[in-house]
Image (tube, rainbow, N blue to C red; front, side, top):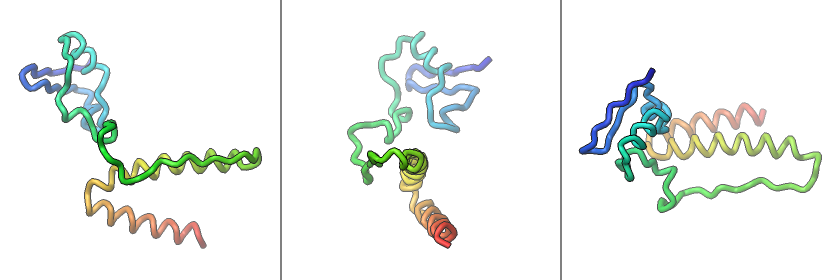
Length: 115
């Protein structure tokens, strides 16, 4: 059983499941406490930039569309990779050192895939 510690004055909470710390997702245990305490707003630390509509993104989501039936598996693979790579770019773009690291790894991956 998980334990949630709620600080009403700061509207902050911690849970022993550590879901927010590890996955940046507010867990169901914390939601239950927030509902029980009738909290209408949460601290901004729990609202990540990737969830906000007022943040200008540096990238554009594009959907790969094709009518040809024989390309359907390729579309699915493309979408799967695009989702993962955009997630990596979103996280890495926050830290300059991570941008360099990801670019280096991506360049090596392109070299391997191209050979």
